Image 1 (cartoon, helix red, strand yellow):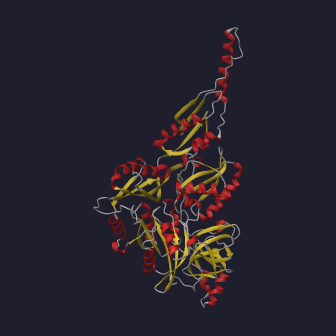
Image 2: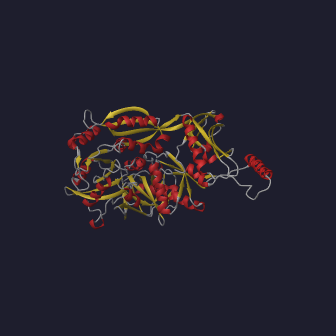
Length: 614
């Protein structure tokens, strides 16, 4: 174990993690040069197209230094705020991290968020400033930022260019020198942490694991401590970065286990794998330890459990494809621990699923993957957050949609999720960003400067903000007011009381339940006015006048009238007495009055979509 180093690369999105990983693969000759391609570890076509890492990707490399051979297990992680759970999973499996900072951009919000996660896990941090080949850099300022943040000597920071291959050997030498070898005992019962998994049509669930104690080989029986599932191991191996089988995996190593399990739910990310009692006892008898010790294998402390923050309805465009959508979500869920979904039915859109995501980019990625990998076109409803209802009898309930909101008479209070937001920005944009945060109900906490007294100063703003305001278009607006220079990271804080109400929509006097939403009381009028105006444009006209109304607890707060179609009942008359014409018009008027009382409006799905669709 002394020659193993487990580490990951953490950074803000687009700071060069995947390019640095490419250079490591070349330097260690893990991938032949004729097979190398940019972003080699980004295996998903979507990752290559968008230029971002979405899925963590492990790889085992062999590096020779001072006549010694070292096993380097690298996990390449995403940088976007929506995929921080991928980072937290990686950090639970390693002892150290390379903190990569773009020389042209300096420290960004997600750099800080990922660094705090690594420091919580007590990981050894190796600071690297990347992209030093770019022109017009202020390297001294960036070095000062990093050394101030990590409280290290600026001389300890490695200056590198992943693109040109500058100082790549230096980084790997520092990894070997600074990051401690893994601790664990081969002679103890097996304890392995599942940090990711993939589904194989033929071999079932393949789990990615870090072995903390013991060892595992094909043919042994294992048990998941969390789900209780038991199975026989079909194969074990390492990542090169393709799956390469080997005889066994030992304490300290990172590799994969082919479980053969077909039930996706039985292999939960964050779960601990151990041997079944009988197999563990056989092993312990061989190693002269008491078999009784194996009965109580302590689960490993997992990683930060992901909590879905954004909820939206997912419906197949063709209603007949609902089972195909269910299968798609189940398969994505295996590789995506933070994806949540449950069946729901909408009067407008038919059968679908209420799905939970970490953010809007996460939602977009899931939508795109379902389209590409499963050939399904989706209708996605407006994203919302989960609300907590406190009843007068002190019971609590979490709801995801307005239709679930109970009668106000039984509610004591409604709580909404709040987030802790960190914004890193050049100081000159401070005023406009603070104004934006105030507009989005942000609560200012504090300001800190990355380097005191620097001329081109950058500031970290700390805010608390309602999650419902954050998920809509706050990030786009932030980029707009800062000319693209500000960056943001956020995490769930707590539930807080809010003055929230159910906004109901009525068409021809009838409540249209799927169009109900939960809104702030003070913005109810603007929201109601917007919906009735949209409906007036998209609803087909009837033979009678249709009232479109927005209501709050039975009180109408916004209204529009859809004028009736005019049927010319006098068209068949020619000449003759005018009284005949008047009689027909009077009859038509009487009929319209009757229709106004009894007429019902069938709302087409296009009208629902105009309001619900993002």
